[in-house]
Image (cartoon, rainbow, N blue to C red; front, side, top):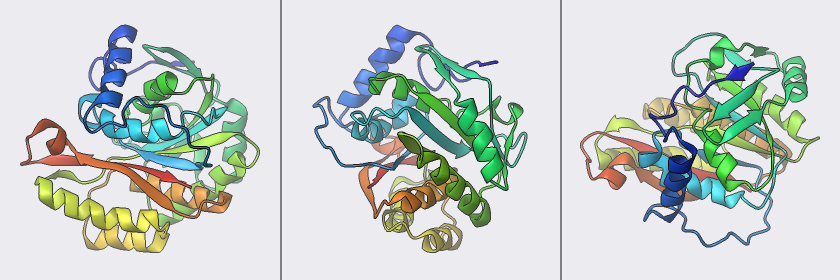
Length: 276
């Protein structure tokens, strides 16, 4: 099957020329990483990346993608939240290609079938993926910034509690052990709060992410009621990266929609993090 793009023309431009131009603008934006090539050879196990409209979160997202540009992964495992709550608690898919204005990306069906065998939660369900933007918006960035062909393993989470995150994270790390792969946690941070409050909330939540402290992460999330939408995706990625040998997270960039647009009354926070 072909998974058609559902937010092309909304979250990002609907034509290849405009889309490439926009990604270039995001890279060169004052909140972007700049176009100087990355020369680092460090091993990056995974990244956290926002998934809002490119005009708002694209410059921040490009920091994460720029950091992995030279890694040429053959598989990108993208984990994100199910905003619509449709389908299964945790779902991947098989026998599919995801279409964007930049072309097709193949789902790694073998890895999808294997992860369903390993995990107690992950099921194969196309419907879970039918409406959501959290995985889709990452794909054009990958297509443009990575120089090689790659396949994807999409995982969408309706359930994001700690036990689900541990199961998914452990299963993902088992897949990555056999592949040249990168893990992408798709999540925005605080939603619809005043700008300085969003900065405070997100700073508090980012600290345990950088320390890769799962219990503290959920504690801060619950105590401060941080409205990060893909917290289970971040948690799963932290667990997988830790299993694979990552020692810490590093914050590459943080900004809010208010920092970018100037409208600071009600903002969404965006963080770009790598696990090394």
